[in-house]
Amino acid sequence: MNKSDLIDALSDKLRISKKEANAFMEALFGLNGGIITTALNKGDNVSLSGFGSFELKKRASRTARNPKTGESVLVPDKHVPVFRPSKALREKLARRSR
Image (cartoon, rainbow, N blue to C red):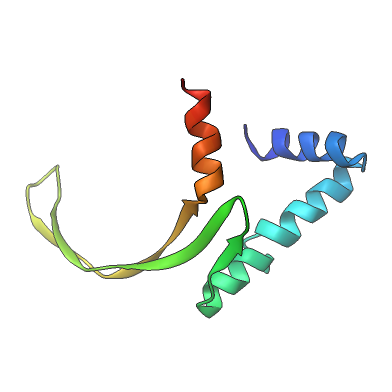
Protein backbone atom coordinates (compact mmCIF):
# COMPACT_ATOMS: atom_id res chain seq x y z
CA MET A 1 0.00 0.00 0.00
CA ASN A 2 1.46 3.35 -0.99
CA LYS A 3 0.56 6.88 0.13
CA SER A 4 -2.09 7.30 -2.57
CA ASP A 5 -3.76 4.01 -1.58
CA LEU A 6 -3.67 5.04 2.06
CA ILE A 7 -5.30 8.39 1.26
CA ASP A 8 -8.02 6.61 -0.72
CA ALA A 9 -8.66 4.16 2.14
CA LEU A 10 -8.72 6.97 4.71
CA SER A 11 -11.12 8.96 2.55
CA ASP A 12 -13.47 5.97 2.24
CA LYS A 13 -13.22 5.00 5.92
CA LEU A 14 -13.90 8.51 7.27
CA ARG A 15 -16.21 9.57 4.43
CA ILE A 16 -14.17 12.67 3.72
CA SER A 17 -12.76 14.05 0.49
CA LYS A 18 -9.39 12.87 -0.78
CA LYS A 19 -8.15 16.43 -0.38
CA GLU A 20 -9.05 16.37 3.32
CA ALA A 21 -7.51 12.90 3.73
CA ASN A 22 -4.30 14.13 2.09
CA ALA A 23 -4.24 17.17 4.41
CA PHE A 24 -4.65 14.82 7.39
CA MET A 25 -1.76 12.62 6.19
CA GLU A 26 0.51 15.63 5.62
CA ALA A 27 -0.35 17.07 9.06
CA LEU A 28 0.48 13.78 10.75
CA PHE A 29 3.39 12.39 8.72
CA GLY A 30 4.61 15.24 6.50
CA LEU A 31 8.34 15.87 6.31
CA ASN A 32 7.83 19.64 6.40
CA GLY A 33 6.12 20.21 9.71
CA GLY A 34 4.23 16.96 10.26
CA ILE A 35 3.37 16.28 13.89
CA ILE A 36 5.38 13.04 14.14
CA THR A 37 8.39 14.44 12.26
CA THR A 38 8.43 17.58 14.40
CA ALA A 39 8.20 15.60 17.65
CA LEU A 40 11.05 13.27 16.63
CA ASN A 41 13.14 16.23 15.53
CA LYS A 42 12.73 17.77 19.01
CA GLY A 43 13.87 14.50 20.59
CA ASP A 44 10.43 13.35 21.74
CA ASN A 45 9.08 9.83 21.28
CA VAL A 46 5.62 9.37 19.77
CA SER A 47 3.55 6.54 21.27
CA LEU A 48 0.24 5.46 19.75
CA SER A 49 -1.47 3.17 22.24
CA GLY A 50 -2.34 -0.18 20.68
CA PHE A 51 -0.31 0.55 17.54
CA GLY A 52 3.31 1.31 18.39
CA SER A 53 5.87 4.00 18.94
CA PHE A 54 8.25 6.10 16.87
CA GLU A 55 11.61 7.15 18.28
CA LEU A 56 15.07 8.23 17.20
CA LYS A 57 18.01 5.93 17.80
CA LYS A 58 21.63 6.94 17.48
CA ARG A 59 23.57 4.77 15.08
CA ALA A 60 27.29 4.77 15.93
CA SER A 61 29.94 5.62 13.36
CA ARG A 62 31.49 2.67 11.61
CA THR A 63 33.97 1.73 8.94
CA ALA A 64 32.48 0.43 5.70
CA ARG A 65 33.97 -0.61 2.39
CA ASN A 66 33.31 0.90 -1.00
CA PRO A 67 32.24 -2.19 -2.99
CA LYS A 68 33.65 -0.78 -6.21
CA THR A 69 37.16 0.03 -4.99
CA GLY A 70 37.43 -1.91 -1.73
CA GLU A 71 38.54 1.31 -0.03
CA SER A 72 37.63 1.81 3.64
CA VAL A 73 35.19 4.65 4.25
CA LEU A 74 34.20 6.15 7.60
CA VAL A 75 30.41 6.37 7.94
CA PRO A 76 29.65 9.05 10.56
CA ASP A 77 27.25 8.53 13.43
CA LYS A 78 23.68 9.59 12.81
CA HIS A 79 20.16 9.43 14.19
CA VAL A 80 17.65 7.15 12.46
CA PRO A 81 13.89 6.90 13.02
CA VAL A 82 12.68 3.59 14.42
CA PHE A 83 9.16 2.20 14.69
CA ARG A 84 8.39 -0.38 17.37
CA PRO A 85 5.01 -2.08 17.05
CA SER A 86 2.94 -2.52 20.20
CA LYS A 87 2.41 -5.94 21.74
CA ALA A 88 -1.23 -5.86 20.58
CA LEU A 89 -0.20 -5.18 16.96
CA ARG A 90 2.47 -7.88 17.03
CA GLU A 91 -0.03 -10.41 18.38
CA LYS A 92 -2.67 -9.41 15.81
CA LEU A 93 -0.19 -9.88 12.95
CA ALA A 94 1.16 -13.14 14.42
CA ARG A 95 -2.34 -14.63 14.36
CA ARG A 96 -2.57 -13.77 10.67
CA SER A 97 0.34 -16.03 9.77
CA ARG A 98 -1.05 -19.12 11.48
